[in-house]
Image 1 (cartoon, rainbow, N blue to C red):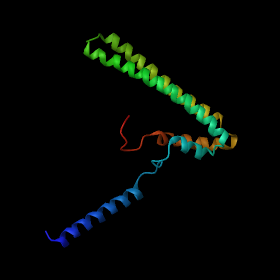
Image 2: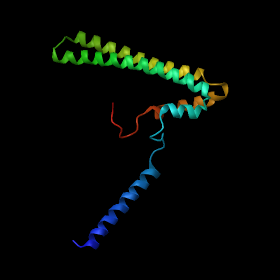
Image 3: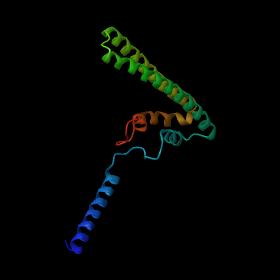
Image 4: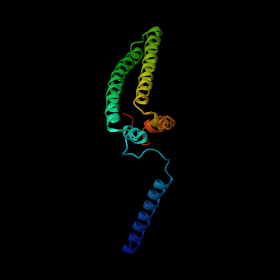
Length: 151
């Protein structure tokens, strides 16, 4: 293969790569930038003062602590559930564990809900419309970006 032909193929390849990159940037779905965390988005969109940011950081610490405990409990319950498969446990044990998993999942959702109730409480009256708008985007803000592996 001649050098001119090789360089032409490389140039076309680079041109196609650039077109794909520009297309991705222009046509990607709107959402949070990959470098911006939900915490940063909330602080920015609610226009929090430094005092409110400090209060919000305390809320985050409580929330993470409670979710971490619940995640640990969930892992333990799932271990029990899958142990039922290997030990041929009766379905009563399996149903009992599934019921506990359901209760724990409800508790996790209650923790999330309380977190946002508390977040609303630190908003000023002027910030409440921004909070309401934020609620409309909540699922997008807290969803993991496409292509990011599950943890």
